Image 1 (cartoon, rainbow, N blue to C red):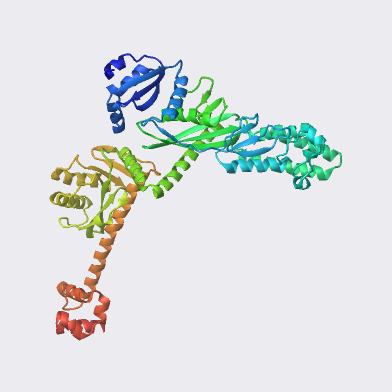
Image 2: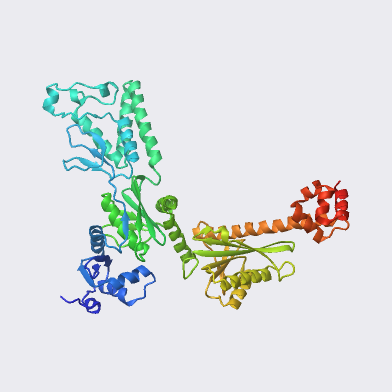
Amino acid sequence: MPQIPIEIQLQTVPHSPGVYQFYDSDDKILYVGKAKNLKKRVSSYFTKTHEYGKTRVMVKKIRLIKHIVVPTESDALLLENNLIKKHRPRYNVLLKDDKSYPWICIKNERFPRIFPTRKLIKDGSEYYGPYTSMKTVRTLLELVKSVYPLRTCTYDLSQEKVDAGKFKSCLEYHLGNCQAPCEGRQEAEEYHRQIDDIREIVKGNFKSSLLYFKHQMKALAAEMKFEQAQKVKEKIEILENYQVKSTIVNPKINNVDVFSIISDEAYAYVNFLQLSHGSIVRSHTMEIKKKLDEKDVDLLELAIVEIRERFDSKSKELYLPFKVTIAPDLKVTVPQLGDKKRILELSERNAKFYRQERFKQIRIIDPDRHTKRIMAQMKIDLRLSAEPRHIECFDNSNIQGSNPVAACVVFKDGKPSKKDYRHYNIKTVDGPDDFASMEEVVFRRYKRLLAEDESLPQLIVIDGGKGQLSSALKSLEILGLRGKIAIIGIAKRLEEIYFPEDPIPLYLDKKSESLKIIQQLRNEAHRFGITLHRNKRSKAAINSELEQIEGIGRKTAQDLLKNFKSVKRIKEASVADLAEAIGISKAKKIYETFH
């Protein structure tokens, strides 16, 4: 069957909510997406100019468009999620998380056991979770076992076998960890009341357990059973201490899922917190690998569906940083202040911490990915047309107008390239004129690079404000490089970043990695320039000390330093040694001065 042109396929796409699928010439699925209006969304791929190269490449490969119409947007979102998981299309985001999570199992038995597991068996048992770490599960089970005596054996404690006396109490009974239901010492009704309380504790609700133990403690105290009352009091303290540690917001906030998202050029990180009775009962952060120019709202919608499905969440309310389209039976709240806002901020902090940890790991494991991410982010932050793989930074150094020098430092792929650093003595400027000095140095640097046919940087950073930036621009203009190399100035006081012909400076986030690299460049240029300046001043001081001797001029002083390398060695030299360099008469004068 001949291939139908895309223009004709587009004409048959309906104006309804649904899911669309793009296929290539080999009938391989490229992309799955959802839309409120299929016609508008699908057509936009072929009518607008795409900023990202990956999107342009994908659109060129599309040969077949399929679509599925659904009743609502929320249905489209669920279907999109299922199709992405099923087909894993090349250009869809990658939800990176395939590990199995631990659950707490309450076994379907006459006297149920409680234990952690990673396997779900359909035998009527109850499973709570999944939890994001086994540590959380163990902590909960330790709490439960410290308060409630439960059996750990695997015996079949049916009524007939217990009545027949088939079992004997074990060491756990004598240690006080079990009440020996195997010998009929504990009624099934009492055991199940404990299980009911444990269910509530696992859900984050301690209220019923605390009330029961408080009534029990008072009853025992009234009966003068103070030792037993003290043991119950200890259980109350264990529960209250655990609750204090886990309660972070208003206890009235119950059965709520909280989601936040942090994203950069290549990845997004979605944090999920589940709240029950004011306590966090679950926390998880998902990493999403972007493939095209996905927006945060689309990524968050997809992540919410995936995470709620994965963790079997039944919460009816969501706290989110912005409105999204989710199932109509869910209440979406965008908190503005108070406890709800604080819990959303906590979720955002968790996402940021996770992102930072991933960056540290990637820097060690995959330095290339780390470099690509930083370069891509700098391109966005500094409004550049290309990634600044090669950056050069200039700084002037002079103290009270003496010994003016300049430094040029070079960073490649975000790291110092010290072999490319250059020092400059200012030749055409008299006195402390930073603007004229900057103009001279920039001109000399790029005139030479052009003459030697060397590669030019993608970005020039000038240490200084508008004045120094304007001076550097004059040199680029003369050399015909203005507009071919991006150039910015950074002022020290408030770290303002200036662009040519833009009077309003840019202020990057103080924690921004782009700003940190620019600061590192500026500091390195300052350090490198000061080194040369210090050496020049030191050399000038040495020359001055020798020139103060009557009959010794600058030429003689330089000859002496060339031969002896330092003033200390000149002072220690004999008349004969000095005479070899500068003649006997001058040698005697120097020797007599220092001796």
